[in-house]
Length: 353
Ligand code: ADP
Ligand code: MG
Image 1 (cartoon, helix red, strand yellow):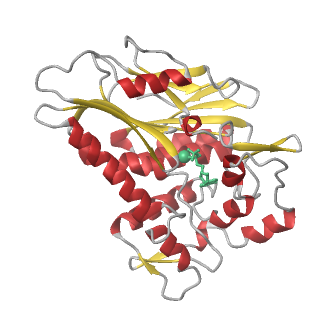
Image 2 (tube, helix red, strand yellow; image 1 turned 90 degrees about the vertical axis):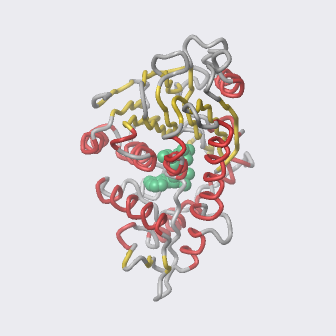
């Protein structure tokens, strides 16, 4: 999988000189920016980064008196810190790795304030989604080892055996996680994995910078934060890629102001074996890649009414739950959802506020 494949929403600035809607168009657009020279007193910055194994583009216009370059650097620094020191389960010494090392230990692990907040939020979403969203699937994700297989384009991928999967599920389950007196206790064999919400947390971590930005877009792969107006005024047009023809757009939403948009789908990170498609979002009930009849789920949420973590977790949860239960969860959180079914039908649910 190339890094470009992880950009699962296509951003289009209407009226922009380079407003092509193809995947490549996104990159050209994102890298070169839009609009003419900034008005006096405003500074702009557009750039691209690879973080969290994902190609990210940030395009920002600072409020008067603020400096776009330093805001941009600060967003990137926070993102790198977040990944390396806190939430990556693959970097030795990160807080999440230490938590995982503490599995089964009677004394548990003392949580930082930030991590306690992320994990508490995640557990609440697990509860509300009936366990469809579950951060305790690390061992299962490792057992399937799909990320490596996808990266290396492994031929003859062999999925794990049923017994291995059911055995592995014994060390999973969010309800076995206990947080008490700022310490976390996870049972032996359990590994936490925050891959489903990492990019959303990154968008949240930019909150202070966002308040100093008059207009912009932070695109962390399939998780996006819009800020203010599109350059020149008007709505940001966020497009959802067509899962059946990934160079095309299936649907788009116009957003004015600060929103989180998150997409989860089975059409980017998957591998084929024996004519079956194995993708990276698991149904915690079965231990197999989710097969709920949906191929793509996009959640749109007003920034002030939620968080990047929440919109990210909800897109994953609704993907696992499927159309009907997905609607119930979307309704509970008051978010707007675009679901694309396996048969190609697009289902929109909720109110775009
Ligand atoms: P992406 O990471 O491609 O944006 P998602 O946000 O939907 O896609 O997250 C998928 C990642 O979340 C997987 O790679 C895996 O690490 C983790 N994951 C898989 N299934 C679940 C689940 N049911 N609940 C929480 N996390 C999951
Ligand atoms: Mg997600």
